[in-house]
Image (cartoon, rainbow, N blue to C red; front, side, top):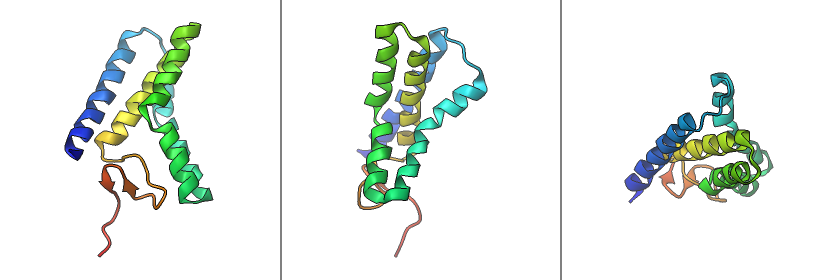
Length: 121
């Protein structure tokens, strides 16, 4: 089942990027790359322990967060919000495709897609 979730993440990422190219809202590539990786700023939550880190990471890595940003853009006519939301969705899908799932409060390396990081014996 995990492989299907990773495939789904890849498809979500590719779909969001494809839609992004079709909406016609221009931002420089360098800014798009920075915004694509912006959700990873949630890692700073781990400075306050694994529970806070997991909440911060998960809040910014669920598809719904990007959908909310894009919806704000649609409802209020803010094309920048649409682009930001699509990049956020693409990032969440990208992470899932790589196997970086939503985090457990127990430890950073425990995710809904299994363990990540070095194996301990």
